Amino acid sequence: MSRQIDYFFTLASPWAYLGHAALHEVAERHGATISYRPLPIRAVFDETGGLPLPKRHPARQRYRLVELQRWRKRRGLPLDPQARKGPFDPAPADRLVIAIIASGAEPDAFLRRAFHALWADGLDLADGAVLARLAASAGLAAEPLLEAAESPASHERYEQNRIDAIAAGVFGAPSYILDGELFWGQDRVELLDEALSEGRAPYHPSA
Image (cartoon, rainbow, N blue to C red; front, side, top):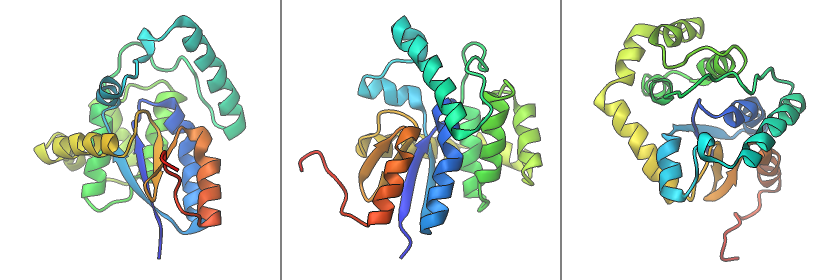
C-alpha cells in the first residue's frame, strides 16, 4: 500500500522551494503519494511562537542568508536570497494551489514554475497576471482556477490546513508528515528518505 506524505508549505518559503524537487524524488523512489497542504505560515507562527523574518535578530537574519547560499549550491537550484522585495502576501498563490488540487489536476508543474518565478526571477506572486501566466504555462486553465482560488471553499481549505498543521505539531514550513512523524525543514528530506527506506515505526516525543 502506498504511503502518504503530508506536505505543509507556502510558496513564500525559499526553503520549500529548495526542498520541493528533492521531496518529489524521494516520494517517487518509494512509490509514496504527496498530499499538498498549503498553509498561512504567519498564522502558524503566531500560534506556535515563531517570528516573521523582519522581527528576527539580525544575527539570525544574516545566518539565514548564508544557509540559503549553501543549500542552493547543494540542491543545484538558482535562488536569489534577496529576490523577494518588501512585504508579500502568499495567500493568493497558496490558494491557487488549493484550487488546482480541487480541480483534480496535479499541482507540481505549477509549483515548480511558481517557486522559480519568485525565488530565482523575483516575480510578484501576489499579482494575478503573473499567476495566470504561470498556470497557463503549466497547462492549466488559468482564469477558472484564479476565480476558484478566491472562493469560500478555497479560503476554508486554507484555514483547515492551518488547523491540521497545528494539530500535527507543525510550526514552520516546509514540514513533512509521515505516519504522524514530523520532519521540519527541507534539510530533513534525507531523513524522510531513510524513514521510508527502513519502513520503521514513527518516532514520537514520548519515546
